[in-house]
Image (cartoon, rainbow, N blue to C red; front, side, top):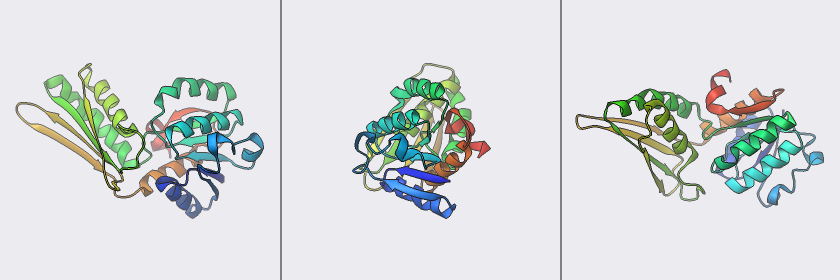
Length: 228
């Protein structure tokens, strides 16, 4: 495949490396080369099979709009733009293109989501839930998209509107750590996922682009990752 990687940051650089190792042809666009999605014209995108976005929340929305208009399949790993999901979904379905997004493309994290969905039932038995997330100091959004997904999963599986607090930390070069506790008078359940490198995110994103090839529709990674 001919892949366009949007973002030359920590994760985008690893995505490009993994894509090349998987024998894809890769071009990387930095933020400076693609201000306000100016480089994503239909003609410029014509030679690519798909784009993969790991940029910033504002840039991701502009990039998505440009790719949808050009009817180019897009995988979005950037978080912090979920308020735009309904609008972008309508654009994707109208354009009949392919769009796949996720708060986290790590297989381990998506397994973690399923574990948390089971544990979330603790809220029905007088447990209190709390989420802690830690990332590197340069991360733009807080709380993380992964933490927001965890919060949603716990609320759904707990069957209640009970508040599940998220506490965020931004420090050093932490790749990503998510912890969740369920506390009662009698005991405490503690679950944790600690990313040791960004490669897990990158591999998932590249495999997502491969999976999306030839498809149209609006997909979330946590619902399709087993098909990869």
